[in-house]
Image (tube, rainbow, N blue to C red; front, side, top):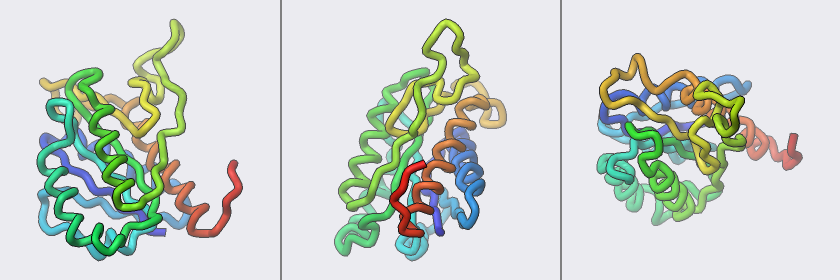
Amino acid sequence: MLISIVYHSGYGHTARQAEAVAEGARRVAGADVKLTSIGDGEIPWDTLEASDAIIFGSPTYNGLISAKFKEFMEASTKTAWFEQKWLNKIAAGFTNSGAQHGDKLNSLVSIALFAAQHGMTWVNLGLMPGNSSSTGSVNDLNRIGSWLGAMAQSNNDQAPDVTPIKSDLDTAAHLGQRVAEITQRFVSGSTQGK
């Protein structure tokens, strides 16, 4: 079961989130996980075509996906979309911004629409919102309260070794594990839920 994680990270924060997604996916037996950083060389289009699942990640800049991630999306038209090479693959997404909200949902919607245009099957986060009661805290999984994908927040004045915080990275790992478990069901032909 091959799971690819394709992401752009301008300052290293989204890269940490991508690594957490990969760590979560690797928790599932049989998951071979490949990380691809956009802007660090050629995109391995053949690997993406061979993947059972592709998890997409982008920082949120000005309420949108990054320009580099948009370039990747546009490049996929010629290499994958015309021949529907990603049809029926599993897809999911994650994003990070400096602001608590930062309009991150707009980025996830853009990524989900991109996956839909490729005919992919979207996997949501599958978590209730954390930090949403008087007993909640920023240490809860899904502290930002997303359903569509994993969201993280990184303070603009802190390096990636400090932020995003552990709960955001744990939420990203949850997404990776969830995608791997669902992909495993598709690969094995099982349609029964847990």
